[in-house]
Image (cartoon, rainbow, N blue to C red; front, top):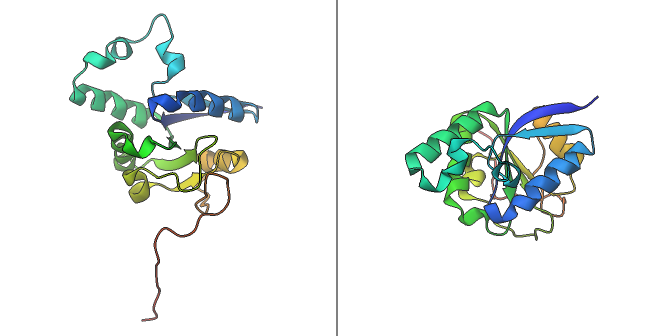
Length: 170
């Protein structure tokens, strides 16, 4: 039985091939992602929505509105994390919008990402957990359930804590 989930996959456009690889990887496990973000598959359709055809002509306010609608439709927000993702203002906007809409925000490092790949600023604030590319079963579980996972490095090893938190007894 194939399972399907509505997601929004935020990504830097140069990492689009990783979006397609992620969808194929999860489909091989019987898990289909229906992605509401703009990716190369949607851009190549002959009859694209007007908003997609004129994306470069749209005002930032209109683009934000369309992104917000796509995020609202999705049950889970996924941020693909590559070496330049943290520099993309639209990715940071999408993460913040997903947080405002109370979406689960998971990160997935792109295939080949190195340890030390920077996370987008808003992912550090609002993200649930980043996963290494090879953590397919954990990724599926995180999309389907409210399971909490430790943060991972790109190689799927457990990450060191981001903050040095000290606890005290009151």
